[in-house]
Length: 287
Image (cartoon, rainbow, N blue to C red):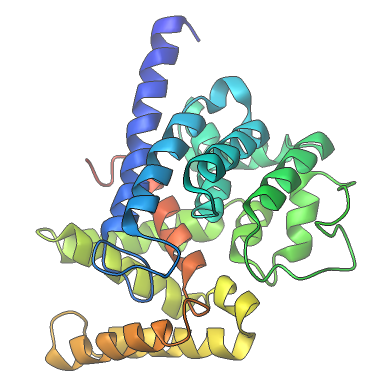
């Protein structure tokens, strides 16, 4: 790839990654930080700064590789923000960005994941340790406290039944490229004049169909399932068209926030950002 094409791609990737992250952060999603709702230790501006740092680091992925780009992005965010704001987004967007280089993401994502070896696993473990995400716990195989001894796909497959981000590495991002892309198109068509509303709808869809694994880790699977059921109730009431659905959304939002941010549906938000990135790459949506 010559220098001009490299610079053009870097500029385009920066725009797509930053836009996906900023749009996800801006939408007033249930239980998440947004311009009108903060956590005690996180504000919307923290996510804005994280988006810009992440876009800069991941846009150089063709030159640095997936795992090194993940580590660099996480370290940069930690240095600038002082805490973990977007580890899940970084883990999801990095392989998608790499796969977008040669055309269709869906056609190239499996190869990108297959090429991640044990050395890449070590870099990703370092990134996760640097971010210190909540509720990780311990496992009997390939625990984060030890050095990994398997390639990335094999390690992620071990966690795929309990972590939706690991699941994407295991199934070649089938959920993002299938369910996510489909629901993105649906909500963009349904809310053509209100981007934030479309993104909130997409977030509800992820919550309703895939119980949030961050909630499951920090609380338990029962609470994660309850959050999923509540999100489905909002959608079933024809959100956002009906008053009943808006009232149910407000109840969901309040319930998710009533214990600090232990019930923050953060994995769902990460999957929203990844879905938006795919949509921007493929021209399904535009910025």
